[in-house]
Image 1 (cartoon, rainbow, N blue to C red):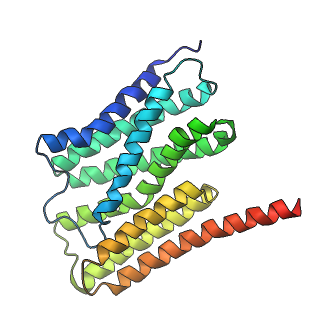
Image 2: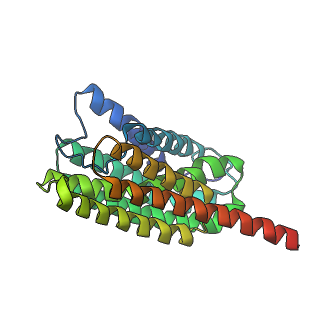
Length: 254
């Protein structure tokens, strides 16, 4: 029987607190959204359901990787430190959001994103070793988590910008939000290529951008922002389709 190491118990504990944190704060009457801090490019509310998927998969994995006789225990051990820190950083992000320390939330989110990209690159190398359960609750979890933060870190930055007094209205507001969206798309395209155009990762980016688009529909006179967002969705979808086409052509050539 493979011995469970300290960091793996940490994964279980932090994944549990990550799952329960938002609900506990809501029951206590706290809110993570700052008043008048939502710019036009804030994703529509329904897209934040992705956090439920992420936290449930995280907790399921937290339990799984502590079970005895895990075939890929070396992979779980390699992931344990990074995942524990990501889950802990999410809790720190929640506290910072409740306290309205939006500058801190951006720094925390950036750190989470950097850790997730490192973890996902490692998992891409280990992917073929994973069984079906591990591909769902470990690989799938990290792919969704990384895909969401790829876009959400820029939405979080936009919220902080507005919170600290920069208007999102008028031409100036459109310009700085367009810049944020373009940076998010560049970031997404870069990592989509680095992650071999992974379907789960790419689909999550599309989900986040779709949320931004439907959020934009609540406001008038932001056609430029809508066009940029739609273009980003088409770009990511095109990348994923081309990968599928290339894969089919490779199979035919064999």
